[in-house]
Length: 186
Picture 1 (spheres, rainbow, N blue to C red):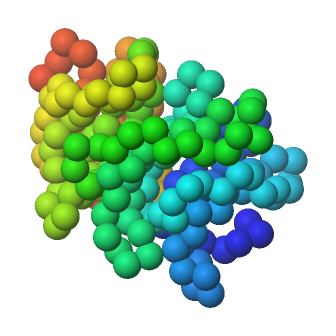
Picture 2 (picture 1 turned 90 degrees about the horizontal axis):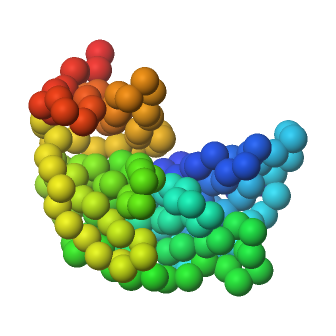
């Protein structure tokens, strides 16, 4: 990366990877974004809000960034959106989450974005929220078998009809028609 950073979010975008925000030793918390493809890092439009420990996902044709923490470690409620095919417009603040949240897992699924666990204030959550990007509404749709947070990694994958969410300490099996279960990571 052109700007070294920790506590950033990353998502696969086209044939490359986009990283957003994070914390740099010299600059502190940043709102910068960079795109990596063909062994080259290029600058991408900066987010409106400086943030770290946030989460990002691609939903349909838009990137969404949720929550995180600002430069004073205050947890954020804001959500930003960027259409990569029209990145000249830049990131747009679209709405706020019902409560501040960082280190949550995100999964773009069907016509919604699912938000798994995370940390709100000093509490690790077990809630699964559904965010509807067309109406900007939230609802609680389930619970993880154990509270968990999801720093540093793409938290979710779907294979063979199974939905596995990999958190900091557990792998959560949220496959439909099954009771939620959990396996501890070693």
